[in-house]
Length: 272
Image 1 (spheres, rainbow, N blue to C red):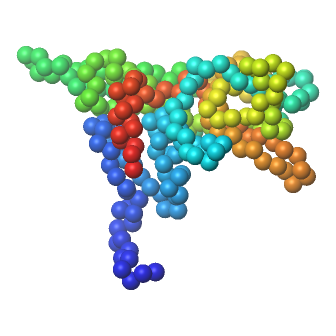
Image 2: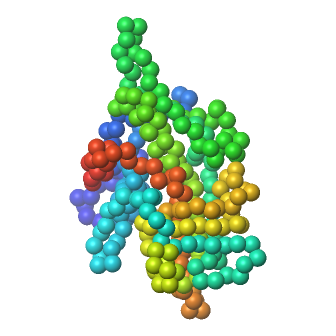
Image 3: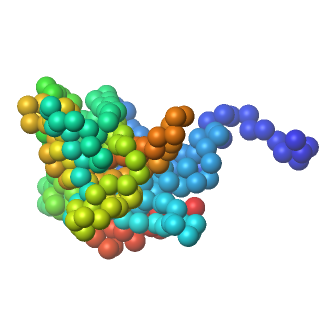
């Protein structure tokens, strides 16, 4: 190591890179935490950018020509392909071989409230509060005591407060819930061009019909909805077989940016 490189005595300073000035703090009881950009030891620059862009709904990926692509998820597009697993039906190309599902409820809340900038009144400041609930957590038995309160001085009406609370709930679900499927091969029948094959591609929508797996509180229904394809792993097994691992997000979790002005703030805040 160079003699000019001096190690930091405080290990916490090695992790904190920069604080984003968002004027937002979150409180749980007496605990207050500020939104920060944190780099982890051993993390590559690419992983650091991907993780922090994702917080505001910007996805960094590599294009076919090797150039980076920064995109915003579009959950309203038509599904390009389908994943199907029905009880008693043999596996066919494009169907599900296995799945992996995790749901860490300790990192989620049943209710989120956002307190905005109060309006002046002769008796003081009139509070502005917007709140939303996570129906999945409520169905799992979590009550009003499982509530997180956010404070944002930029929110000036109830609609803005509700939007911030909704975005926070969606961010909690993305951070604490994962769903992936493994399918045979790298190609699947296209729903947009019947009779033709398509390769699994990130930033697209997938129609999922799964009788074996269900979202919390919806066990009797299975999963029958369109999901966002966040990431694709194409690989080959030791015996030569090819497989695709598909990382999905629920449509309701695609809650990021409100409008063009909000997007401009996010791009400025995540420029490193």
